[in-house]
Image 1 (cartoon, one colour):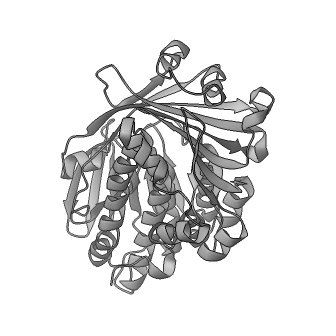
Image 2 (spheres, rainbow, N blue to C red; image 1 turned 90 degrees about the horizontal axis):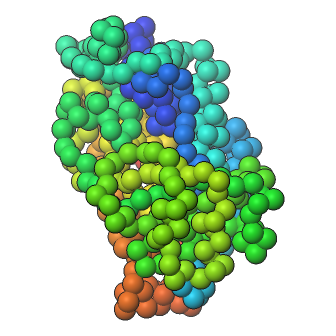
Length: 399
């Protein structure tokens, strides 16, 4: 490692979950990091997210396992019901047998709490500098270094650039320039206090109600003091990718025919955030010289696999491991990193599209969906999940 420059920082575009995870992975390889965040403060918007065992493997590898574990709610099972007739399509226990199989639990957590765990970890290192209100506008490379110019004309130089700047990544736009694929599916998210949440739905579970062209999700957050509520529907409008305030009237207009038990979810929130969703076609190259992509910048996906944040965490750990085995040589490490990640993350993107179709099935497809997992044992469910939840640091690098 004697010929590696440890004085010049590595630049990370984006201070979200992926960017902070990348910063932690880089610090653990001995680097200083400069995070460039376009928002006026380092923070996170959103509501709850689900964490598979793979996310906890990643938290541990990044040194923030205990922080994240202390803020998560551990579920007893995952369950899917048909939203028209309450039929239980599938139920997967996530207790002791699940933990024994995958070495870590299944949990739900507020997105802000994931971000905070990573942020605290990064701040405690003393090796991560944060610049807010700093949007990447221009990128230039020369041998061994990357120069970024922000929207105020300031120059930032580093020995490499990690583009973790999210679904509308400027770094990806420069190097790839591909269009987003707007789905037409709209997601409404809200958090509801337990006192306002229906008693007959206060399950310690990641719960989904699947219906024609729509679905509803709920699970506990913050020790069960709150519940996450997410509803998704196929919009009648021509959608553009983005987030805005939602309206109660709009969301209620999409759930005719849903059983009363599930329908009460959409009457609960006082305010909703509205996401018009999109993904991108998977690409076979993330790395361009000393710049590479990570998280949603590399593989934006729809939410149906509940793996967006988990994949960003995995990316960061894999990047750190690729640097480790290549003696912190960025060109070789970036190549190994993308080879290790491209097929797996593409599988998430494509599986998520297919899962959206399964969730939103109608007519005969709905009957097929409801028959898919009939009589399946927990062990067979776990076998089917091995490819996803069996990921860990020891197997994260490509051969």
